[in-house]
Amino acid sequence: DADVTQTPRNRITKTGKRIMLECSQTKGHDRMYWYRQDPGLGLRLIYYSFDVKDINKGEISDGYSVSRQAQAKFSLSLESAIPNQTALYFCATSDPREPTDTQYFGPGTRLTVL
Amino acid sequence: AQSVTQLGSHVSVSEGALVLLRCNYSSSVPPYLFWYVQYPNQGLQLLLKYTSAATLVKGINGFEAEFKKSETSFHLTKPSAHMSDAAEYFCAARSAGNKLTFGGGTRVLVKP
Image (tube, rainbow over the protein chains, first blue to last red):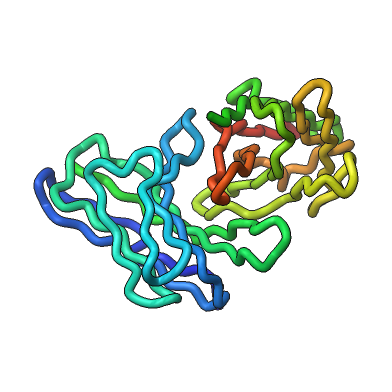
């Protein structure tokens, strides 16, 4: 089984709808991250959480919110989706006890907002 | 702020030829550096990482990267391309707070 899972893998929605993307991990890592990927821009950080009580904004947090329900679960919400939020979304985890705190990525969720 | 630049959004190589993907970072303090690979319809997989232990880093699938502080570069190479190397490759630099800054990605096409 995959260490980092994301649901759904694909989602098509309409402008103005509320959407939640979910991420679960079995790696036992404290740190979790949400990124979006757009062609030519690489991945950009939306939000990150270093433990259950810690939530931080990344470089592109506007229009998004997150919830860290447990060490293993980190959800990303789009309160009112808009077309320019169409992108590939990735969740990642890391363990600060590892010297390089390497981030490990889930398979991604492809979101289309019509 | 940290920035990472990957020269060339697309690279085409023949099977068996050298693969060279370029990455430059902006920090004056050498950060931790990473190369990830993304195969079609998959997430990012770690290829290799620079941790300051050695300037030449070997990764999976025959890839390696060399850290050059004087050039602020961390270029990725593979001596002989395989068809299975067709993918998108991302260079990333880690800054304070374990924030990763990614380059724009380089898509590799391998021609038979």
